[in-house]
Length: 181
Image (cartoon, rainbow, N blue to C red; front, side, top):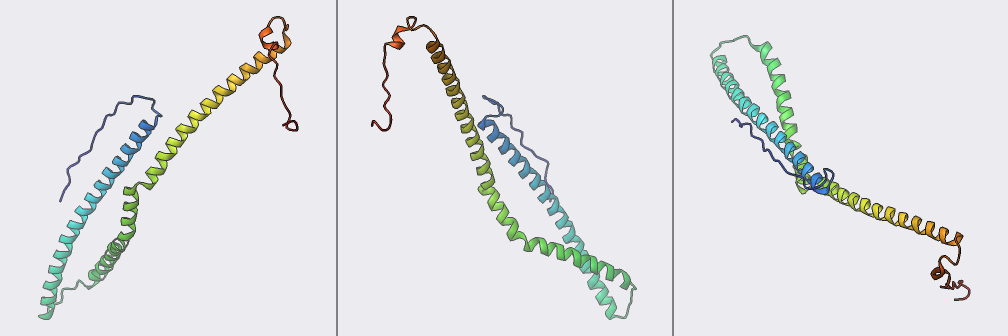
């Protein structure tokens, strides 16, 4: 069973910055699609090997059956040396396949976790939080600049002539200490 090479090409125009959450979301989505395409390719290649292996095993079974019948008739073919090495190799292959199949529960759990997207969800919420932190940092920077500007104005007013800015000096501000409250 063969698989035609087929890949999906997606061109997405980015309306905002390359580092926007939408762009990050699209990038991770494309990366996940690429990983799935690669996984599909590996699975198809493995399926082809398994099909060829099945045919090889069936042929070996037929040869074994024929040898078994001819051995019963007293015909010794002298392949004892090769059958031992071949048997050892086949046992290793069978053990590897058995190990792969017994670990399928682990692979299925990983596939469920990937499909659930727990890693993806964490990355997405991290990107969203980073965006929010950046926005808040910009607000803080803007407020600090305004504060510095107001402090400069206050210093300039306090060092200047009171007659120059009468509206500031005519307003009295009473500050009560905590003990007066």
